[in-house]
Image 1 (cartoon, rainbow, N blue to C red):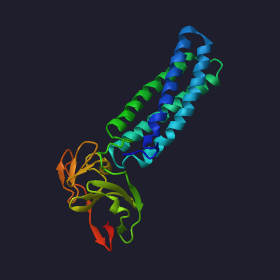
Image 2: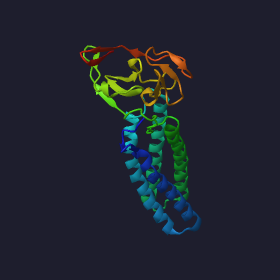
Image 3: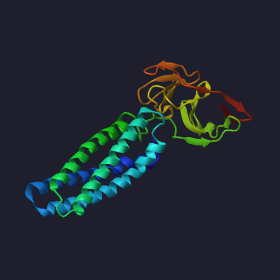
Image 4: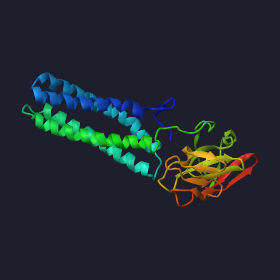
Length: 262
């Protein structure tokens, strides 16, 4: 799924997280040098790096929260993983804040306590980073991987009138192209195949991947996460690992306009 917090298609969160990671690591390294040598200069550098880590972590969190709310598919394994990723990163931030407050507000602060806190933070940071890499590499969050001629990513927010929705911009879709439509609390994919238009749920029943970000060929959509395939007109599964089909919605052409019935 393409990131909602991006510049010209390039996600902001992966770009910004390199700064707090570097500053967290530098803090731990310089405090370890202070513990080893007793040189107060290393401790002073560690304090500056801690403050830098906190500030940049807060900045990196902003696009991360935006992606969590608006990019990660709801009710999916990716959503659960993203929540754990965020909680771990917040915990790391709080640990380093606690270490900073401890050393700044205590003249007899023990470097052993500081290193213990920072060491725990580094372990959690590694786990959070592993989860973040899985979100990108496996769940393809922030990745626009679609094939050539898939068309420009299109996402609409429409309203229903007595359960009937006019699909705006459907004429821009070419064969084997899709767009994501938000209607009330539903995410529906509108696609064009060689046999006409089709509408189906954006939710893959296997792990909740977004089908709008998948591949559509010959009336079959493939989930980008694990490769499950579905007939877009009937909703029946054509290849696993998904065992169940996807809901489809009736479409009607009237007066040159395309309508979807919820």
